[in-house]
Image 1 (cartoon, rainbow, N blue to C red):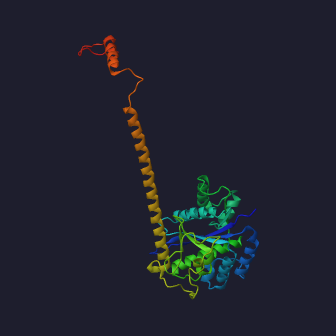
Image 2 (tube, rainbow, N blue to C red):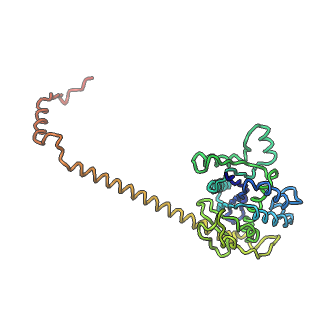
Image 3 (cartoon, rainbow, N blue to C red):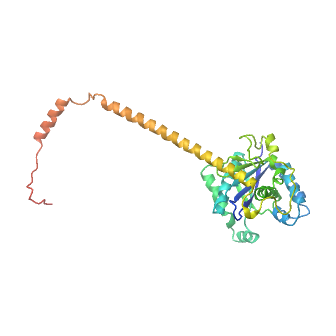
Length: 344
C-alpha cells in the first residue's frame, strides 16, 4: 500500500504601510519513506548553522544557506502548495484561518494524512503547556478550531491529523520556511529570483476560491489543470526567469510606496477569480430558483386541472340544495334581545 505524503507547513505575512498585505502558507509535500533523506539534506543545507530561519539569515548576510535550502526544496519536494490570502484585510487572524482552511482542503485533495505546522507558541508557552498537562498550546488553538470545523463539516477526511511542532526540533519545516520567505520576498520587493528556484515544483492558490494563480512577469497564468503534483508543464518550469541578480538591500519596490508589480499582478488574478466564482454562484442560484418556479408552476397547474374535473362522489347541486334547506329548517335557532346582557 502506498504511503500518504506528509505536508510540512510554515507561514509568512505582509503587513506594511500603504500596502494591501497578504497572508501566506507554504506546504511542502514529502513522501513518508523519503523523510529521513529530506531531514539529512535540510541539515546539510543549513550547515554550519544549527537552526534555519531564512529571514534571520538574510538579515545577517548569509545567502548561501538560503540558496542551498531552496535547492533542497526543489530536489526533495513531492510538490509545494502556496496559499495566498490577499489582500490581508483588517484582521490578521481571520486572514490566517481563511488561508489555513483552503490549505487543508487542498492537502485533503492530495490525500495528505499528516500535516505538520510550525507552532506559533514561544518556548516558554510550550513549556507551560507541558507543565499544565494540556495537549494544545493556546497560540495554536485557532488553527485546531479551524481543523475541527472542517472535519465536522466533512470538508476534509477525519483521518487527516494536524500537529504543531517547533521548527527547532524538525528540520523538514525549514523547507516551507524558505519557500514562504521566497514568495514573500517576491511580493514585497519584486524579487522573483528566489521563488524561481522552486517555481517548477509549486502551485499558488487563492485562499478564497482555491483557483490557481501565477507569479509571472507577463501577468498571465498557465491554463487551468496544467500543473500539479503529478503533472509539470513547460510553463510551470519557465514561469519566471532566474536571470535576475540578487540584492541585499531590497529590490525595485519602495516599502513606503505600496505594492509592486508582482503583488499587483497576483492581486488582480485573485480579484478576477473571486468575481468569476461569484458570477458562477449567482448563475447557479438563478438556475435553482428557475427550477423551483417550474416545479411550483407544474404543481399549481395540476391542482387547477383536478378542481375543474366533475366530482361524482357527491350529490348533485339540486340534491345538495335540498339537503341544506332541510337542515336549515330542522336546526334550532337561538335568539337574544339586543339589550339583554349575556350571562355566564
